[in-house]
Length: 202
Image 1 (cartoon, rainbow, N blue to C red):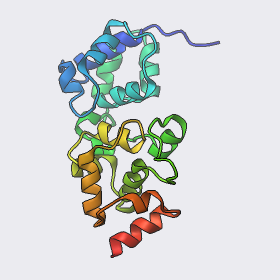
Image 2 (image 1 turned 90 degrees about the vertical axis):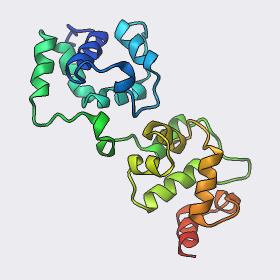
Image 3 (image 1 turned 135 degrees about the vertical axis):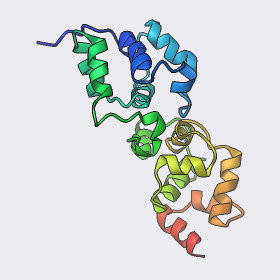
Image 4 (image 1 turned 180 degrees about the vertical axis):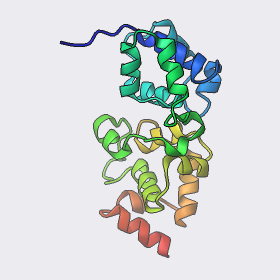
């Protein structure tokens, strides 16, 4: 038999902001995420019936929570007490201040399932593939890569996951990193990691 939720999601989000984020504003909670403040406000009001699961996961992480913890909070009889117990847990760290520790979804797998930016016709790779390949080659975290390109971690991840176009500014930085005038040969490379390695060695 399924366990009934005593606490609605909106209540968990509202009290998490008050208790875990010490009453921070919507903007402060989402400061390192490319999520508009109104989205969290509407979630707290219960106006979004089917929240985007990826955005929801990022919001949970901004409070240092995961889906399992939120589900447990929804089953709690006393939400305030349950949240205060979390604040004294040695394991709780607010992910908003520790983005380098966030467990970002695999961008290649996400792009394969949900990708919306398609490679150019007759090209084997996309700009997202080049971004991902260079990041993995450097063994960088999403947070580190986002700092290099001066964008938020969420914006960087969305580009690497082919959810939004790679900006012209970042394409220019990519070409500079790889010391090429054009990225076209890499878009057409049959073995992209080897092509990136070769270019970096040269």
